[in-house]
Length: 562
Image (cartoon, rainbow, N blue to C red):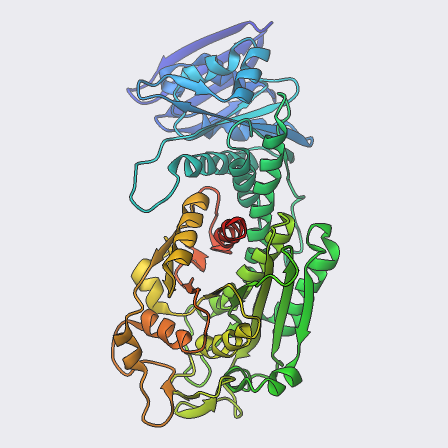
């Protein structure tokens, strides 16, 4: 029922003055538009549908400006429920809508396709006033990714990125947003996973916190039961990684070893989905009793007592050999006496990223009710300089009786893992996977794209590689050749904690760990490079990443099935 009149005044080749009249009410007296942006808008009356009017006009000079005018919609001052739809473009530019998007298009007399037709959507676009049920609708494009040889399912990754772009756009553009209803009519698991990840924000310590935005599954069309089950699995994967991110992001004074234990306890008691996980807290007296001299040598420089957190998920048959996860839990790493440079040291709050990931993984296993027995072990301590700290050149005795010359106290993660891997052997695990932010050399080698993996078992590696391809959080195998172990020889002790030769820092660290496990199916994941996102992926914004929690859960699922 709208009567529109539009007049253009060309002032030069790039700028136009526009006057818009709707039902005799002048919406704008002047809109000065430069290609790609709106420089000035003078409006006489707030109009909730102004943005929709711009889309309906479809003039070429406005096509690059649609996202720029979204702030005008913020006159809507009520809690808004939004809908995120997806679709793809063929090579010739023809749009293909998902089932849910087709439903909305039919309900709105083909208006969705008409609006999309105004200007091809490159990534994401938000429409206002399209649907009575949803005042704000976002359409995100599932862009096909280039084929690559690194074992990633590109179709699933494209869905994740589309959902991520849409969630980010809606949260950025819509004031008072309360809910985002996600199109999960195809790839429901991946949609739930991406929506949950992209909706996460760490604001625990802010005095003013925005209300949480609810993520829910679109039920505007009849969905099969499998679609609903897959959605729940995706949400479980995403929320498990989000808990890992939460732990990693927490400042060190809010996450000492004791506070780490407390937060895990609180999570297990407050979330019914993970109530089946059994928790055992091992204190310093127990660690001493276990003769974990390598672990204690790292902790002794701090006034914070160490703990070993032990979690059990008994989803398999009674007596069946468990899978073991071991995660490095240095809640703050100053480097000890071999102190780190001050620049960037604050990020060492996340040096417990391995512990965060294995805790998130075992909780994910419980949420999915995986049919396996699983044990997660996290040695927790700080690495601090003090009069009682370990000094370079000191020799300590590990739980398995090996003596270690500690020439670099900043190579501490391998020391606490060594004793924990030896303890893991007491459970006779079928597989053992340790995860650690272990070496800066891994960040140099692989950057933030993928996790480095070392393994003595090619079948286990194949499972991990496949899991990474499914989740999009990929892994890359590196060598464990015998010659690298020779670089750890010590004239004083059985082994040195660092190499006496330059280069191959990540490999020699892995060879060190290998000497403390008897498991024939063992893998070491060095996550130093992926600890933090510096280049934002649409569904994983910048910050501590919680990677590769989802890949661990997917690997556990594959191992449980096999």
